[in-house]
Image (cartoon, rainbow, N blue to C red; front, side, top):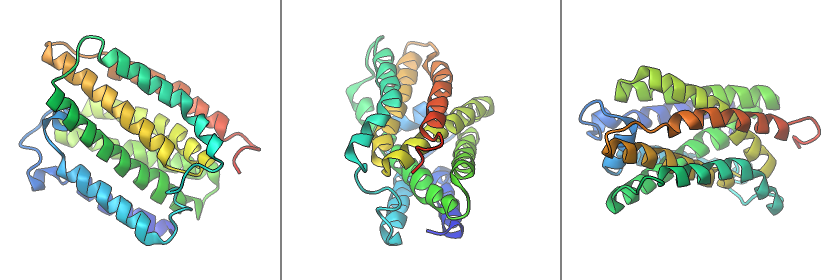
Length: 242
């Protein structure tokens, strides 16, 4: 996977991700949580299918991280972000669960988003960047693009300040996610954590909205990603990158 092909794939992926208005997935500006809980997102499904197809057709499935963690015991490196995700999930449901049918829709959508974003940014794009750059420039460039991709949520929701906060958090998360991807040689550990993380945030926001309140969990999560970023820096310290 060359960098040129990876960037071309990213352009198509972004087009599919923001195509909700043309595909009828969004009828107007609404919160991201409301979009995720309102029905199965066709743009997220198409973006995930596209990223998966690119990886499969590349002929470099193992190099792109589609295999199991190697060595298998390296999967334990995922425990800090996984612990954060599970704690957020407990906090999200402390005040009550959203309706069961909403939980199912949110679970499907967040799984699609996690699959789509991990394959695009930690498999395709990161591999392409590493063909031209050394480890740290590649990780930072990929994380920056990951953060910028989240800024387009402001176009759908109208909440541009919230989108900027989300972009900053995504950049910090991206460093940790890329570090774990490189150390485990697999996208699957962080794909699972990514899905749980998004599921916790969305269900917390929906639960708070149902009670006429604003959830503080998204802001708490923003503070939590800074230690995760530092954890990523620790994982990629000299002598451990191989």
